[in-house]
Image (cartoon, rainbow over all chains, first blue to last red; front, side, top):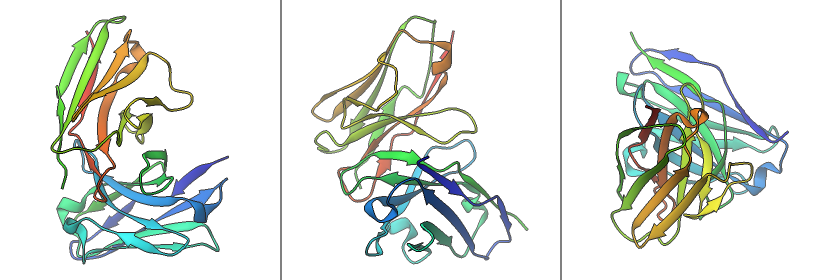
Length: 119
Length: 107
């Protein structure tokens, strides 16, 4: 069936990097945009950026520019989000979510990946 | 960035009551607004897109409406299964932004 399946929980030290994966199945991967959204414990949703798989085009909000990199591997229909220079403020659940294009809501979500930053 | 101001932050209502959540955009977003439902420990789920279009499979007691930069999610007949946090989201600007969320409880 149509789904996004994310990698498992991660625990990282401050200053380290983390790379979360999002495996798509059941649809044509290149035809849809992949977004990344995070949610700190007890907090709201925060959009981190998006990638268009067919050409690798990315858009990041200013807050994350220079610290996040989103990539895709069309051969394995997998999207990746790497976040660098982690601090405790990056402790959150990270979600991938699919949208149809430029003006589209997020119709399909992954199950989420918990990233804990702690020494 | 476009700011989304959602209210109230929490609400408590009886089963069967009509519930209304409001989201105000800091500038025009046309109808590029979505509503999501999130239950504890789960990923958000799309309820409404393009301000008033019901996502497939979502119960018809959920509806969305708009008036310029003010958007409303209505649950016409609250059910126990509707206990969740609800978020609005604009997708007019490239930098997507969410409202702060509204936690809905049963009285």
